Length: 268
Image (tube, rainbow, N blue to C red):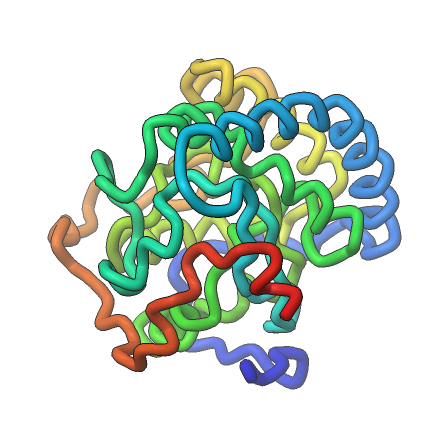
């Protein structure tokens, strides 16, 4: 089991500026998550139902899947999502990040991913207190051990609950290599240090703008959110990270079967 992160957070080689103390209290964020999350779930339930039906009618396997992720202080929990890939796909591919044109993604899954509908069942995780509406992306324990070895301060992002959306998610593409993870970590640490309920409100609005297809530059100007100029001002001078920089994933066969696990299997 992954050890708790509560006792310490190693600080070696800061990847970027992380200003000021956070102005949000745990109670305020929890109240915000419960109030807004409940309203969003009521609105989203019909859409979730239609998406589950579409997945069930077009591909084999369960429409929902559960997967272990790490929450605040490294506590494991089971995340709930709508299946967008072929069932048990990692039995053949092993653990790997999804890339553009990934053959494992089903036709319906591509639509769900593009619209982010596949993420909506995470509202149940939010109401249970395992996630927040806004925070760093929840990562798999199999990858965290590798990433914390390769990237200084990586575990510090787990000082807050992971989020359905976040400062990194609304302006950077999904992880594809170590370079992309390092870059996102800067935004995650910025949020950990300076997050507030007001920032959460603005990031939810920015997420809606992002889903509508407008670039983050629009919401950044309108909402006053920190972007690349504030979080990584030196980026133009940094060397380019090779696109094929990859992680050495765990070779244990048990780790290659966790990508999409049925609800029944998760309960067993």
